[in-house]
Amino acid sequence: MSDAALANPPTIVPFLKFGADGAPYLEGQQCADCGEIYTTERMACSKCFSRKPFKAVKLPTTGELYTFSIVHRSYPGIKVPFVSATVDLDAACSLKGTLIDVEPDPNHVKTGMKVEVVFRELEHRNKEGRTYVSYFFRPRQA
Amino acid sequence: MSEDVYVLGVDMIKFGRFPHRTIDGLGAEAALLALDDAGLGIRDMQALYLGNVGHVTQFVGQKILQQIGQTGIPVVNCTNACASGATAFREAYLAVKSGEFDLVLAVGVEQMGKGLLGNAGGGDDGIPREGLLGSRLMPALFAEVGMEHSRKYGTKPEHFAKVSVKNHHHSTLNPKAMYQIETPLEEVMGAEMIAYPNTKLMCSVNVDGSAAAVIASAKKARELGMGRAVRVRASALTSDRFTQRDLTLPDFNTCTRDAARIAYEKAGIGPQDINLVELHDCFATAEIVHYENLGLCGEGEAGAFIDSGATWLGGKVPVNVSGGLLSKGHPLGATGIANIYEVATHLRGEAGARQVEGARLGLTHVLGLGQACAVHVLEKV
Ligand SMILES: [Zn+2]
Image (cartoon, rainbow over all chains, first blue to last red; front, side):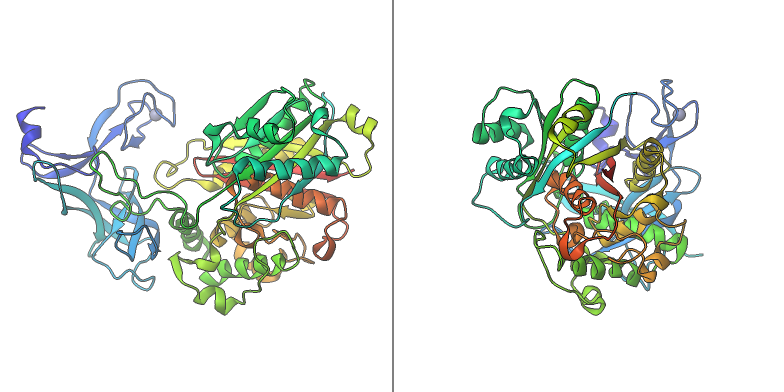
């Protein structure tokens, strides 16, 4: 592991990366042929089957809430209610996540609402005592 | 062109919770029921196809034969999530269709625990992703699919809830359903919220169960007598081809539309020819989207379609007259053969109080998260 990697906090998904300035961002893998963007690695493009190497691209932090559910029952230890969200990132790919900073109530959560990606430290720590970082969605002010 | 394939015998056990029984015992019971229904014995069977999810690495098919007769026939254990039973049925169908066998047995069986489907997970770091990265639980996934429909067409929570009212009503007419309880709209909508807009009464029931079918070639069916035979007019199985959000939110719609299209083409019919449907109502939201996916109504019309009463017993195209997964219960591996049983029973005119009068063509549909979608079209002989 490089020094740079050691300097960055642990993340909850491998596609959450940190820039040279230490700022977190999400990284996609873009098909060199059709332009489709994925957040996970693959041997070839699922859409066009191209086997050309994928290009790493920085994902936008803005998007729209495509659909959602408000989860009231989950496994023991999982805090409910929470908003499970499927977000279309602007001119990129869709992304699953939790929508925060909003009342978990259908009167407040609306499909089509503008959202943004934010990064938060979790309460979980790794063996070295370092705090995990994950991404969330929150409503974006117009 | 190869010859037609027939269901000669088919049956299911009453679904319920049987924690003290064995998985092979449950499967063996359905196998014997189906053999009895066909008037045949295990010695007549040339192969066994088994559908199961939870115990599939344990050679469930072979264990069933150890309970009812070890004839040394080939056994294939199939797993395809909630489409496992239908996949086993289809493999059995294809084996006969190919000309390899004249008589085969398909069995679907599941023994489930109580509670939510799926698991909380946690990577190497032990941190559960559930709640952190949205929800991967079935109720939420199918709720999101329902909300997608709401977004496009203005479908309301009441529309989804009406599916539960209907299917619970239907189950009061089915002695093999787990529950036989009416649930008025206020009760469905007022039940504990699981994943908005699906309340507890809009989620399928986790039960144990089994179902089995004896499948025969045309030659064998003629020899044994076509009296109660049911023709398999079409069998289709699809996976998820690439669509825009499938890798983020499983696309249950496209694989269903693909399977339906293939099945209608193979059968040479259209959705307007179907007299009854058993579709995968794992959640109330799912039934609504599948009305359109299966072509039972036009795009965006599913809400009005449930409002119209078309899918109630006595309606234009009754859907899930068995009570569906919502009330009959959903033992994953058994579900795909149990819905074959339901449709075949109507085509035979043996469905009693819930009989769809004059049924000649019926369609079954199951959908496994992953995705695997199976559609079968059955015809009265
Ligand atoms: Zn591509």
